[in-house]
Amino acid sequence: MLRQGNKTNYVYVFINIVILLSLILNIPEYVVHVIILTLWYAYLSTAWAIISGYTGQVSLGHSLFVAAGSYAVALLYHHYGITPILGIPVAILIACLFIVIIGVPSFKLGVRGPYFTFSTLAAAQVFFYLLIAYSHITGGELGLSLKYTGNPLYLHFADKKIYLFIISLLWNLEMLLIRKMIFRGRLGYYLVAIREDEDAAAAVGINVFKYKMIALLLSGILTALGGAFYTIYFNYVTPPSVASLQLSFRIATTGLVGGARSWLGPTIGSIVITPIMEYIRIRFGSKFVALPLAIYGFLLLIIANTAPLGLARLLFKGRDEIK
Amino acid sequence: MILPTPILDVKNVHKYFGGIRALVDINLSLSSGELIGVIGPNGSGKTTLINVITGYIKPDKGSIFYRGREITGLPPHKIASMGIVRTFQITRPFKELSVLSNVMLGILFQEKNIEKAREKALEILKLLNLENKKDVICRDLTTPDQKKIELARALALNPKVLLMDEVLAGLHIEDAKKILEIIRTLVDEKNITILIVEHRVKLISNVVDRIIAMNAGKIISEGTPSEVLNNPEVVKVYLGEEYK
Image (tube, rainbow over the protein chains, first blue to last red):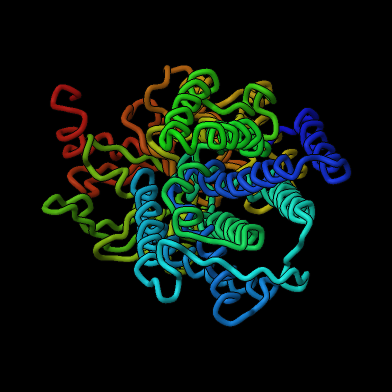
């Protein structure tokens, strides 16, 4: 099942070389920004794939965890002046709370398939509207614009490349963690067994509830860390940017395009989608607001037709894939 | 043939689905190293009995003991890890996984080292003559092979009691006989207690030690194959009048 392939390793190393070069070479700031975004979506989609791709419990509410992470950091800084360095542990705790609220009832009661998907979607939407409703705390629809101090202790850096370094570090750590825990360990076998057949998984002694919770915890905590990065990088959070349905869909589609069962799949999905989307947004976004979405839909259609199991399947022929 | 120590005890178990009496006052005792056949028409409660023992369904009344310890109401994965393992009527291999991975999943439960687990899985596959198909994805297997995988995966858990739900159904008579042979060997050599649900009485009657006949949720006869098959009630409900 968990067949290893050299090709995935080469691509992984190649991506890191590109990151390294963009850190060293003098490239336009906007390109750095696009690379940061590409890695950010890659990071989020990879985290999403743990529960949705490997374990087969498809979530369309991962913006909930992004929002938990980004708002925890933003609110603590905005209201109490607490540095994001201390905000991040709080963000993780809040994400854990959300994971328990969603995971325990769903997985205990055996909520599966589309029912689980819609539960996650609903939970994320509830949080989206809570953020808007409690505007005296959260800034409502306009969100929170955070004060920039330039102080590294508040993770404020003038050089964008430092943020690129941080997100590439996060992404690399995530990739290696998943490789060690899931692709080279027993956990991967358990998760795929649950995805294939829960009853049969229980028949081979797998505690289905426990391992679904572990998958959701891993996925949710990593996602919340991605949310915290968003706040640190942009110094500005709004419900549409971190808590919306669009973000949940974007995370999911990026994963599906690249291959949600593959180690490197979501990253490849992001490399293909994010730069194109950024280009379209800048080129047409101001004149035709809905056009980027229309093009996005068309793009998905083409990819879904040519590579229904994700681009990674085409590239790596099923190596380093949870299947 | 019946050995003195019961390994599994089912006591006064009742199960109702709405108004349907799926199991009525079932009392059953399995000894270690015994091969038991369960026969009965469709809907007589055979599968429900397996579901109740393995924790997939909770009984409404009664209790189940494994080596003297009550296991009623424990979750399926707990019961499986204690050594009471089942197979499913409709085979449920992990379809997207290779034959080897399917079997490894059972072993990984006890053996944490993946390489060692792979070796053990290969041993089991050899036992069932499946080692040359280890890399085949299960979805591409034939029905007899899928049934064997189901058996292999169950064996991977190192079971003490194995409950097999119509593992022979849909198999050609020669394939069925081969699997029965393997099952008999497992009972005799590894001292595993096996309960096998099967429709075709003649197929199993000269292999099993004991037969339990069920009808409408009740055990109507129990004993050696010849005793049960000559029981007038069994003949009437199950084998049909013309069997005489």
